[in-house]
Length: 140
Image 1: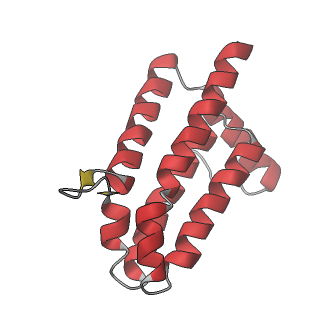
Image 2: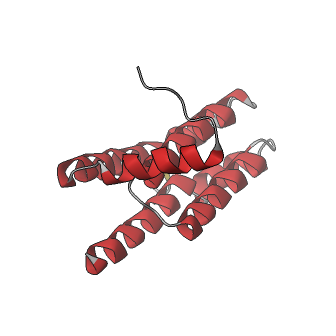
């Protein structure tokens, strides 16, 4: 079993290895999985008679603190996969900002629930990641 990296430089080296070891097929699978997560958590169901769509983020956000923490954990997984796909630091920073904003405002009763319906951090992060991946493909 490999050792866990103990220093920041070892962590960066391990992360770079994880990025470079992905095949094209792996990248496509990860991207598809992240698209599914973004859809399920932000706009899986449309309310009948309206154009308003909800996902698990809005539903779980109704549970004080625990719901927002659980959706933030899913968003953290999303960020990890974006890192593995080779997203730039700037893109990752914007993605973290979206997740933090969703969490911080999400813990406020009522206002946070409305934000979960309108802000859609996972969908925003997916758009940022797709833009980044398109830039990478043009460079390659």
